Structure formats: C-alpha cells, structure tokens
Image 1: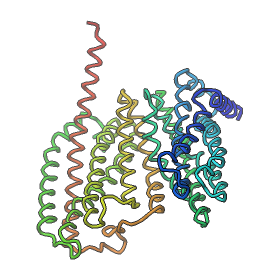
Image 2 (image 1 turned 90 degrees about the vertical axis):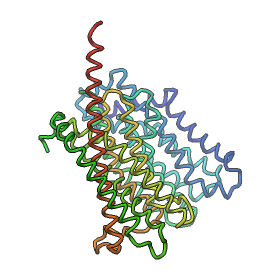
Image 3 (image 1 turned 90 degrees about the horizontal axis):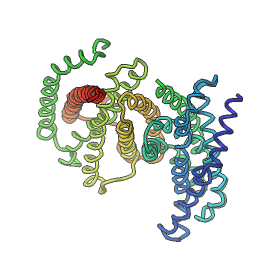
Image 4 (image 1 turned 180 degrees about the horizontal axis):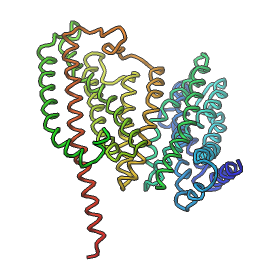
Length: 221
Length: 241
C-alpha cells in the first residue's frame, strides 16, 4: 500500500509541476470552450443546445493530453524496471498511475466545468450534473487512456497514435455523459445515462489496468 | 490445428490450398452475382435498387466476422504465443477494413435513393463507422512499431481490448439512436425473407467468406516472406564488410 501511495504521490506531483501537466490540460479544455462561440456564432440558444456535447468532447480531448506522461517517462529513465521488481502487482502500479492521471486531468476539468458552463449558456440546473458526470466519467477515460499509453510506450512520437487508439473506445463515455447533461436541460431524468456512464467507468477500471499491465509485461521480454 | 502452427508446414499447406480457395471464391461469386442481379426478383417497393443488399449485407457480416477472427487469433497468440496467430491477425486487419468500407459505401449508395440522404447518424451506420476506426487504429499500431515481435505483442492487446469494448460501443450507440431496419436473417423465429432473396444473399455471404480466406492466405504468405527477408537483411547488415 505504501508503494501504491508513493507512485500516486510521485505522479500527481509530476503532473502538477511539469510544464505539460495538469495546468495545460485544464487550459486546453477551457480554450475549446472559448473557441466555440467564434466558430458557431454567439446566439445563446445554439450554444445552449450544443453545450453538453461540447463539454464532453473537450473533456475527451483534454484528457488525451497528459497520457504520454503516464508511462513513457518511466520507460525512458528506467523507473519501470524498478517498478517491475517491486512487490506491488503491475495492475496496481498502473491503477495508481490512472488515479494520478485522473487527479491531474479529469478531476481538475470537472471542477472547472461548472464555471465555464454559463459561458455557453448552459442551464444552471445542469451544472451539478455536468460536474458529476465529468467526475465519474473521466476516471474511465484515464483508465482506457493508460492502457493505450502502455501500448504506445514503445512508439516514437506516439501522441497521434494514442489519439487514434483511444478516441473510438471513448465514444460510450461521450454518448452517456453528454446525454445526462442534455437530459437535465430537457427536464428529464439524467439518472439512466449517469448509471450507464458509471458502468462504463467500472468496466474500464477493470479492463484498463489489466491490459496496460499485460502490455508492460510483454515489452520486458 | 497445432500441427499447422509451424510456419513451414503452414506455407506448404497454404501454397497448395490457395488456388483452390481462389477458384471456390470465384465460382461462388459468379453464381451469387448471377442469382442476385439476374435471377432474384426485384423488391416490390424498392425495385432493382434493393439488389445493393446482396453486396452490402455480406460485406457488413464480413466486417464483424473478420474482427471476430482477428480477436480470436490475437487471443490464441496471447495465450499460446503462436507466431502464426499474430501473422493471421495482422493479415486480417486490412481485409476487414476494406469489407467495412465496402459496407459503408454500398450502404450510402443505397441510402441516397431510399432514405433520400447519403448518411444519417443512425445506430448501425455509426457503429460500423466506429468499427472502421478500430481497424484503422489496429493497422496504425502495427505500422508505428518497427520491430515485428514488439508490434505483435502490442497489437494483440489492442485487438482484445477492442473486442471487449465493441459490444459496449454497439450498445451505447443503439441506445443513442436507431433508424436502420432490424435484423431479418438471423432471428430466433427464422428469417423473414423469401427464399428467392435469401438464397442469393447466403451465396454471396459464402463467396465473401471464401474471398476472405483466399486473401488471408495470400497476405499471410506475403507477411511470412517479408519477415524472412527482414531477418536475412538484418543478418547481412550484421556482417562487417
């Protein structure tokens, strides 16, 4: 458990302090939201109707940003070899890295989103659901992303490869997350999509660490 | 099957079988096309445009079937470390991607006169499009890692993760929107299609499957040959001049 906490702490600190870390993905998220009115015009009715989907698309893209720093630096400086020797199973090492990535991307985004919501004229009643859906959904995004990061760890300039691997797998999160927020705006119950979103996250939290650990083990042979 | 895990034995076997599978595929395709385009009755509502179905539906079947075999081959490679299973999975991916593209394109050609639009964001169209991107991701991963054995290891895991995710994506997209007609061949109460249309459809399905097997043999043989070539070239480079 100490090892788990140490990895988590190390990765969170790296994420907060490094230049390509948490601040960058939060700024990127905000930028996508700011850019939209310039592309689609400032009419508040249009912005209101696209806001739920837009926030979720922005979240999908912003969580991609930190993925390269989840596994890649550790394979380069040899940290990974030491982690392999530690008594902690590789799955849990990856889980610590997933949680760290989530804290430095998804968590910050979900805390930021309610403040950006009014800029796209999102209903005030929808803000808590937006925050909550991002809060539970982005953990799943980090889990799937970590598996892809482990697969791409041996790829040169793997950023764009990562995006192609990850984004199709993230579509369920986008569908359920955006429709939960849209449901609130349409005065219907958001609990069904939220439960599906939670289910997707739970599945991703099982599949992600196992797949990532398998990918890391295969690379050592 | 174990006996054919040896690449050399597989090559001898595949070399003998390739012309036969090509012949069988061509025969089934000719018969199927004749039945579909000439013998089958035109649809009472859609007229001759309904004949697109005979090339469209088998392509969509193959899009899923090939992904299934790719995932199976990856699982075999993952569990038993069969080198040929990786080769089979790698060889399948572009074939499956082309079948998927064919299903999408023929579907669009049919959708324009029937639905009045080339593309709608309907659940089935969307999930086939996502399947196409999963194929692309798999192909990109193979080409991004230079050394074949490392690429194979990564690709196996990706194919399996994709296979686990596919039902979830399918379900979420269905939940999101539905317009496409429901299944009319594989149903528990039997097909709802008259035999005059079902026979050409199934013949075309058989032809596409045989075509896949023939192409798979060719691509697998090419892959094994190119790996040998790579080994020879690396060996030559290692010898000091």
